[in-house]
Length: 310
Image 1 (cartoon, rainbow, N blue to C red):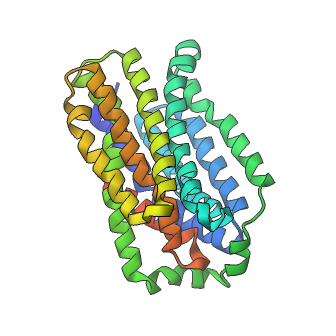
Image 2 (spheres, one colour; image 1 turned 90 degrees about the vertical axis):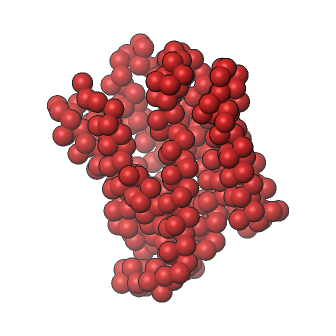
């Protein structure tokens, strides 16, 4: 029994607390290796996800979402550095796309879960199911070796880690601006789009769920194709190509007068949006100092979230 503005605030606070996790957990990952901080942040945010349905009131709910954001904030920077450092240099774009496609795959699975789990077991189990995924990620991370690149470039102290971004102020500022704009693009077209389809186009929940699955398939394809294409076109040209596809899709995605138009528009929109993000892990890591490849891209990414969230 809360209004829509309160739900939007719960999304905003989750995005806004993510830089805290990126700073703390990113520093730990650059000092001690990728695996243990990655496991720690997955377990941390998954526990608060599982606690969410038991929040006794809206204030506690917001507190859980804020703490969840801290844990989630560390995840992207560490995960991206681990993936890119473990990838062959000629396939970084492809593996960058594969990693970022996980976001859309998770979104797609959540849409399926809403149809399968929520109707049968209740909405609480949507949150509780995250614990099984956290356990799987923890096991996979334990089995993964530390990247050789981290061992070669390991920072000597926390002071050195925290001072490094200040030595690359121009790169840092440019990348934060880039991520702020891209955050507005992605969350602006994703988080409230199902509600937009319901409120403006008056579609049923079943139709919206099917569209959500469809446009997340488009997002996965966009991640893989644009990410891989960036090995030939370069990172910046690939990002601009994906942005152009997203721009062209706006009339159908927002103003389509038929279900076909909305389906095609949303598919192309998320193909373009996530196509941009398919390049981002490689792009940010390649522009980061070698000794802080968890902290630097992670904080850049999450500050973009912080500034874009409002």
